[in-house]
Image (cartoon, rainbow, N blue to C red; front, side, top):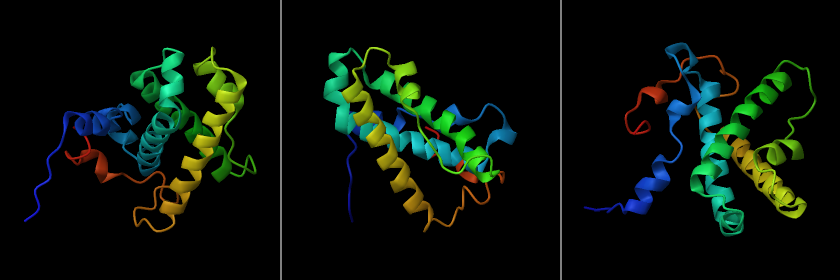
Length: 153
């Protein structure tokens, strides 16, 4: 028997970004919105790990990083839909997206945050290749994970 104890820090980490940030009604519980939720969690985790200490110097706390992660993920949803519709050739994340949310950051830190975002994007896509949920190819399908209480604490 294995007993795992959760610390307060683990609980905080788990619940900073909630799936409810990605739907406001039942019909928005789609696989694409779940993908965006998972993407935002990845953004939060990596930005905090890679740049958290530097961002604190700019008075940017975990809550702001979480809000930014949700913001970027929602922006990317539109970009993903453009890509799937053949309107654009490549998925992009612009400098302006970061600067809009964090206008006081210097260029070097903005570029490092962009590098982190691209890293998370690549990791998420590589995971999607083996995940049976097929969030992108079945983007409009209902996602039952939104209804799983383990995810929606």
